[in-house]
Image 1 (cartoon, rainbow, N blue to C red):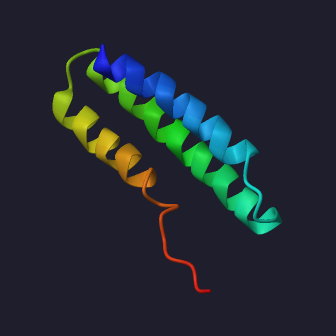
Image 2 (image 1 turned 180 degrees about the vertical axis):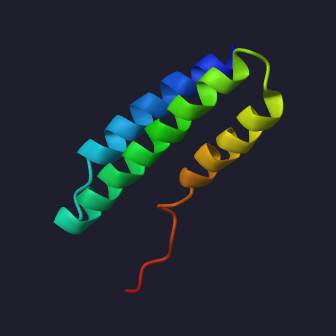
Length: 77
């Protein structure tokens, strides 16, 4: 059940990141690419858990989770 909640949350987060960036075209393009990467890693990890390949699923979900922190970086003022 927790995995399904995560999938729905990631879909909403990817759409929000790609849509609501207000820092200009370069940031919007970057967030669109990040959203595609989020959805791709999510798409690749889901079929691996269905037949019970837990190790492969774990590796792919770690990549997905790490992408969530890709936009957290300090900016110079």
